[in-house]
Image (tube, rainbow, N blue to C red; front, side, top):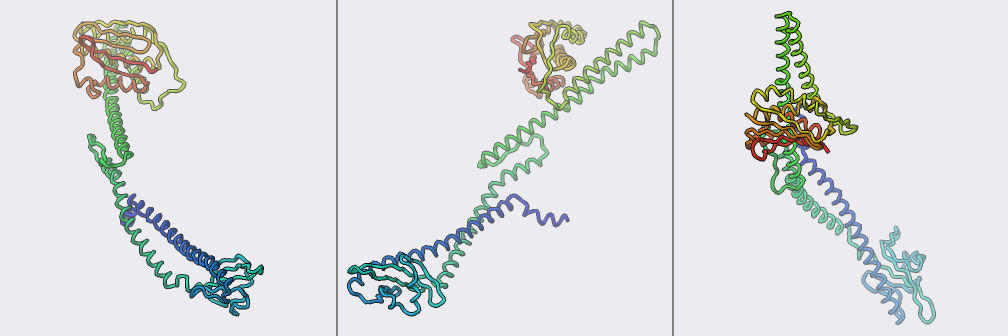
Length: 422
């Protein structure tokens, strides 16, 4: 079975299929032209003979009016008659054709001939006029027709071979970009670049550009998935460790105050896990929820809760966090998603700062987190330079059509901006 498929495979290539397709079209067009040319030759031959008879009629009338005798020999193949009784016995039936008849006659009693039936007036009397031309003397013979057909077929075959060669070269040239792109698709190197020859059609260049963009988007999605896995592992490991530790401590002492403190730690860790899971589930959902969007209002208390969550880390580095709200904007993301966004931005700002103030500013269109830390270097300004948490921030922003931007602060530090969808 495999051998039979291998044997048939060359005929299944696009080059072969295009060649067969154009060959079929060439055969159909060639056969059509051959039939049309043959029909045209037959028509021209008969038309020339009919016009010759019409011209001979004028000559015959002039000579008959000058007392020429019937039958009148005009050429070796044309005879003119002005009396029916002068017609040879085998041609007597020609007198039955109506005046004005001009065409070829095929009859079993005599050879093919052309007849022009008319009349003329002399001295007030009407005289019949019959112009007869032997078709065998003026038409191409079967041998001549065979020669013409043979020459036509040879010319068509030569043209067919030439056009076939040109079509094969053309199809191979057209298929080369597709073959090259197919080979590049098989390449496993993630840094490879799709390209086609410089003289390729514009559509192939556009296809190569689209494939390059698709590969870049695919690599970006892979990085986001890897970041998602690492981030989920990191974020869930911490509360799990707290829960395990607090559970073990619950067994050590039975004092009510001590037990309550451990239960509070477990509850807080469980709440953190719930927020993390809800936010991450929002990230992996396939639907974009662009229809029937439900908006909610951000209030100051919600942001203060987020600040309280990162406050211990900020205080350990001598940092303070301020909140300035110009309004209470409406957004689509849930509290868990907003908590993950701002927690990551605040953690990033705290890690980049050694002292000073981290400012959170909220207006109708955006949320900004400004720090006065080390600022951005070249690698951090690129997408690959973002930390693990910032990759999650970027992915969440794409999920809700938000814009995420990192820019240097006017003096020192960094400004992280979350711009809401319009």
